[in-house]
Length: 116
Image (cartoon, rainbow, N blue to C red; front, side):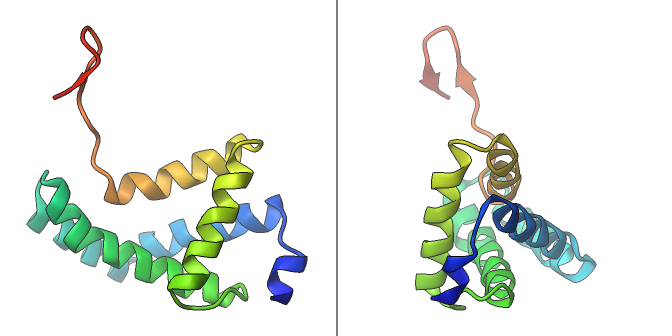
């Protein structure tokens, strides 16, 4: 767990930017576009097709930064990021960019605060 000893906001930002770069690489971008096209706007299909691809890319990136390249490492990284984003708007912005890849926008009726 030596990777945690030096983990700070700057490391977090770097890893998040590396994840975004990885997602935007041509071959990964193509796979994600195809998965999104097959899912359409169906949330369940997005979670079945797009979400696993994004998680796999995140695993590859965080493994390169010393985190375990498994589910446990991804959960640990995600928990650290959620804690840090409370105090760092840049971390929150980067995490939102990544989430936007696999979470489609939700239309909200602001008059009644109901999900449409």
